[in-house]
Length: 206
Image (cartoon, rainbow, N blue to C red; front, side):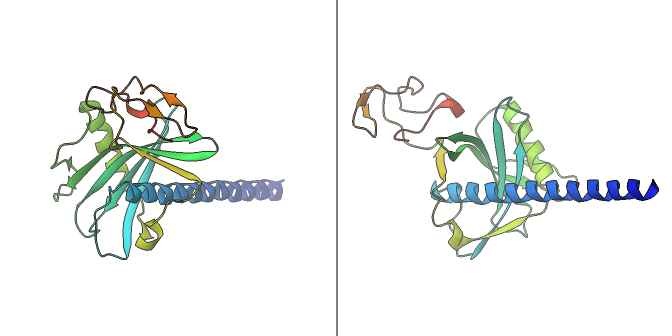
C-alpha cells in the first residue's frame, strides 16, 4: 500500500510540474506576441540594443470576464525603473487580439522598500494607479525574459494589435468597411475623434 501511495504522489507531482510548465510556456508566447504589438505601435523606446528585457503578469480577476496582461519593459535592466503597459486580451475571428489601454514610466525606490512612483503622467485615476503599483511589485518578484530586437520587427499573422493611441475617424465623417459599404462612426468617439469607450471600442478598419 505504501508503494502505491508513493507512486500516486510521484504521478501527482509530475502532473503538477507538467501543468506549471505548460502555463509558463503559454505565458512566454503571450509576452512575445504582446512585445511585438508594443513595438508595432511605437511604444518601445528606440535603442541600438540587440535584445530587450521584459517581464509580465496575467490578471484575470480585476475585470470580471476579461483577461488582462501587464507587461514591463526594462530599457536598462541595471536601473530601478521601467515602462509598464496594460493590455487587454480577447479572441476575435480565431485571432488573439492585444488591446493596449495604458502605459506609464515608473521608478522603484532605492531604499529597498519597493515603493513605486510615476515621474510622468499616466492614464486613469486612483484605482488604476493602485492596480499598476500592485502589478509592478508582483512582476518585480518574477524572472525576467529577453527577446531579440530582430524578433520584434514584425507581428505574428495570428495576432491583432490595437491601442488607445490609434487614430479614429471623426464623428462628422463616415467610414467605409473593408467590404466597401458605408457605416456611421462608432458612438464612442467624441468630438475630437478620441476613443471614449476604453476596452470595448474596436480599432477602425479591423
